[in-house]
Length: 77
Image 1 (cartoon, rainbow, N blue to C red):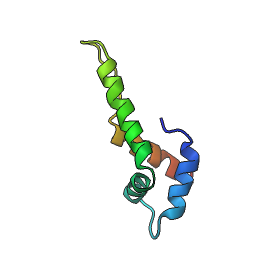
Image 2: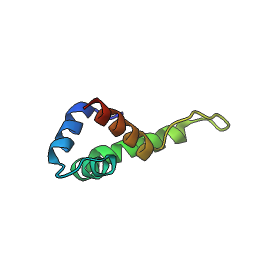
Image 3: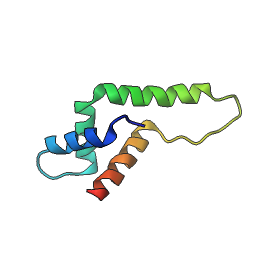
Image 4: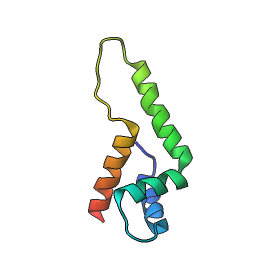
């Protein structure tokens, strides 16, 4: 989960020049918010390490989950 996601996504959208696609949005997000991306990935790996052996809790890869959030947000716009 990204804190203040709506605000960050609006900022990314305003910085994109030309055609807006999921890939261009993702790339611009990584460029503008590298610290947020690092924290997002760190939380994912920390959660995976904290699971007890033998238990499986489905959690999407950080890139997949961010792309999904972007896709959903772009559809709303």
